[in-house]
Image (cartoon, rainbow, N blue to C red; front, side):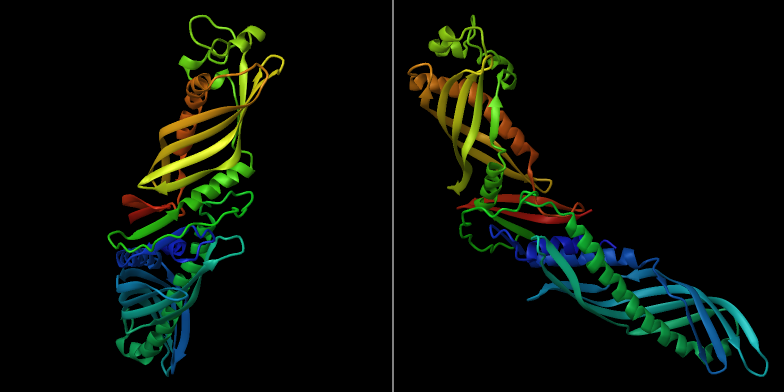
Length: 438
């Protein structure tokens, strides 16, 4: 049963996340839609469900029921509400039709045995299910049924075949047995959806944390205003703490290091890292000391981040600040040339599509400062030229490529965002969206 899809979405938005930089709100419209989808999935799951064979005796008649199957499901009115412990799902007025095979024996003075088909109509079925939500020891959300009750308003049995007067001898017993069995059967279906299917689905959710080590970042998330809008089904309020935590993880995992060589540059800047050139500018021409001292070579730039990049949301814009060190060497001979301190600022555009957050650089600036030189003094004008010709020419496309991969939001594969809006508040990205189950 795929009711777990709805439960999986709701648990993500209603549990207290390990990452306090994430707040969510589910509106009444979202709960109504979730309830509709849950009923549709319950209907699909219930149809074709086999009820265990029954047998019994009433007075002089013994009977057996076999191949009893639910063949139709009339949707009830239902609703999901948020409780202190999680969720509560109630439904009223559910209807079922069931058919199967019967066989009876009359043990009177004249024994009679016969068989035929049985049709059962069930109406006025109500159920109430509690769903508890929480997180496990690894920070992943967990879900469990905290109780299911079911009641059946009326149940009517119609036999096809055999003698009508004999049916009356055991009809009431059959109805009571089926009522009891159906009560348990419906709760079994719902409990399985929560305790098994939903749990398995949650185990597949993508994590925002670095999977190999869930290290807490050494900084606190900023306060975020409450989500008050009700236009959309779901709202996710995500502080820049989430992105800064990812950047911190990348920093400590040494993912922000790169050795820039000639092959990394765009075609028109391909020759810039040569120490000797004719016509097109190269580093040996821009810094003549390098060209004279180390002709006919190539230069490599080993770039590393000194501190994790910091993202902040202010005045409706997303800004990123990062700093690092660039060490320049000759490729041939590995001769040290320069150590530069680098400070980068960038403006980033964010959008949400296909349940991922995407980013692209809208403006990027880089300032370089010489820390150590093996080739003499170098002017700021030359450093600025190096920054724009080589480093930004490489870094901006690479960052855009990374942003184009997107950061997945924690939802299941069958739930999609539609009519999504992104709003930038101070220190906060707010995603408002409707949901579509497919």
